[in-house]
Image (tube, rainbow, N blue to C red; front, side, top):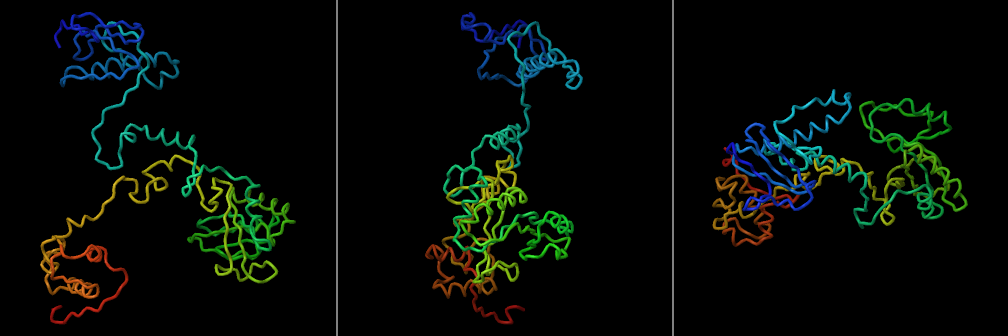
Length: 403
């Protein structure tokens, strides 16, 4: 720019300013001389998207970052207490005459393009972190099956669900206290005996608490406390409600009902296995009234992150794309399989082990490896690409061919 340039933003072709609005709606810059700026005068409208363009070295960054942003940031820092300024530091004042109408400013630094497939505009600018936190706090969970809005269940809701089970059901109420954790858990026996409990279920087997088993320290274990045992009866509503409330407190909002399916008239912990028991899980957490067995986790920021296993799509693992086979690139439609019509194996010899196995598959499914691939049906091409599962074939391969 020339030394005498007076660039008046929003000027008409005749040189008259177009400032018909309130002057307070503009950032007015006078005599900007920062870096390579040459005494620039400029009016920039507020509350608008303004783009600064120009040749390389014409002063775009000097105007936007080194003048407007730097002065807005400097004024904001000077408005803070002297104690706060000790941590933020004091910025130098840019070279200009006057700037009016300027508010505290923020800037997003220009970064080189990342080739990481997990980088997006939101992650690079860190806006994504705030969005994940926002969704976790104001989001409304829905059932993944029927898409109904769901809410947390109360103790009364869980008791009513239990009472809907068939009358006479033999039930053992369990409170999970250890779930898939390593350790010996030697403290559990003494701790819960003092609280009046007598039974515990360890890795699917019910024990008396004073006969707590020795556990392998390096293996993962499941331990549930037996809170109550009863045969379902409407007259036991008060007892069942009190026991469920106690179990929810011990299990931190989660309980399990062990439904015993046998013909005995008592509830014993012996000989209980997967064949004669059924485990029902109830939670005070989010649950759908139509699909109560579908556990819905608490909303948290990692559920909204495609870079975390909890929030990533299981199909693409959060990348947004997935690799698939394009049959048009695999097959040469004009050649037979024996002639090398499958491109990754086009140099395989006609008497090779791989080709003989494919010949056995072709013989069983009624096609030939000596006809052009374009004459094969889609089903036959699918067999070649994806195999036939666990089927076994007889392949004749003579010894001299292996030498």
